[in-house]
Length: 247
Image 1 (cartoon, rainbow, N blue to C red):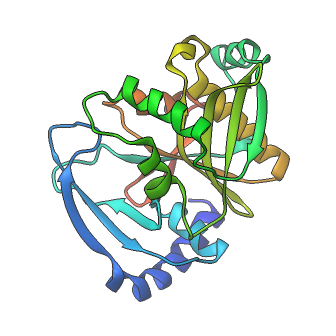
Image 2: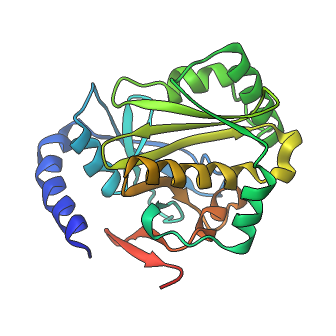
């Protein structure tokens, strides 16, 4: 364990002792459609300091709206938090190919906004990728993306002015948290999910951010397991970040 992670563990233990009384468990059907019950361990928050959010992320927590949560599923450990260290990344041939394939895209940094343009693309993405669920793009913005906890932004990708992808991220002094990414299903050949992560890595390098959190890696779910193709990466297993990939 690195000195950074050791310090985070110590600070989070103290923080957790004061906040655990506010957390509750909520059982639901697995949101990733695995045949098991999912249990969210979560609490609602008002604005929190940058370091507090950093400690939660370093301890495997995620954000959904104004909630911070981790998984307490009784019979499953499939959801594994994954983290990248941008300065250490080594791109493979396919990732370099994705960069070349998308060099015609315009990259736009903007504040979070539930605009009609964003809602329309998000709806198209959700209805294509998750047709079995009653998803609503406007609810995603109001209940998931937008928050009063930490600072966030959108990284939009445009093809000749047309919005084809949008990454929702939280940003701190030394961390970035990838919240969600949606894109035009008609542009699937561009591998925009991979291009989004490559853009986040480059943005972190420009901002001198050391840690990029990608959410959950789930080996059984194709939409989540591609994250492990970035190397090296770190998985939060048994309470600590463990390196995987190239040395």
